[in-house]
Length: 259
Ligand SMILES: Nc1ncnc2c1ncn2[C@@H]1O[C@H](COP(=O)(O)OP(=O)(O)OP(=O)(O)O)[C@@H](O)[C@H]1O
Image (cartoon, rainbow, N blue to C red; front, side, top):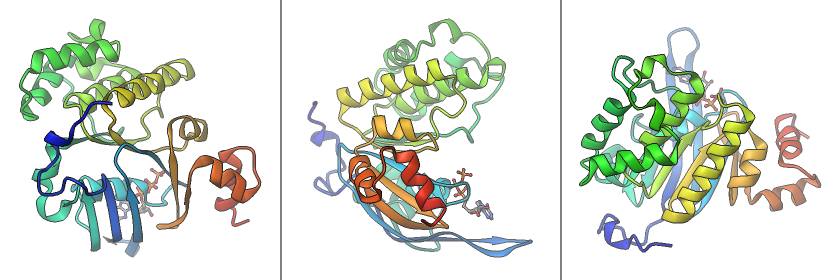
């Protein structure tokens, strides 16, 4: 595993990769009034871990990832990345992190190459062309590089979004349903690509997913949210044992149905 300590924000060399401290988000909705999407969430994710963030629709996963990215301000509590409070200082953490989400669309008229080039420059990469070439190879995008992003299928867009997320070789990677729109074969291929990349870089990954097999395969630990709160955590094996189940999917259903 490569030593990346020299690239870590110098003021926090030993801090965990990700931390939520009583992290809370209350949306003001015109029709529903106050909606508590994330309620006093507290967890710590050590460096080099791959952690799954699970929960039913509306449990608060995307809101949590958005606060960890500094895209959304918490109503109270803190979201920290590599020791940095994202509400105050996100610009210090951003060079060391990245994310991929199906909710973010790339500019349609730009080609894949142009899109990735813009991001490579935004990230201030020292060798943008080499990084683009390497990620295009990793994600099998060579034949798509000169096509407008708007003409790609959902699965092809997902691979481009992942290439964008890996461009700066982030130390912390947040993934929101990275394989949701992929066919089983491509989904499997993307998981292998992510595993290979992670082994090479030793990055920390937080992965929101509804695919329990994916989580069992990729994740060291799992956080389970229900109704905006953290209700369970542990390794997939610990959770299976705690609930007396063979598969994580059954554990998830037990929690969702309040058994
Ligand atoms: N901008 C917003 N304004 C008001 N309420 C919101 C807003 N965004 C999300 N919510 C609400 O916050 C709650 C959590 O939503 P969130 O998108 O974080 O859940 P999720 O776990 O990612 O769900 P899914 O698995 O369906 O993607 C839901 O009740 C949702 O309706």
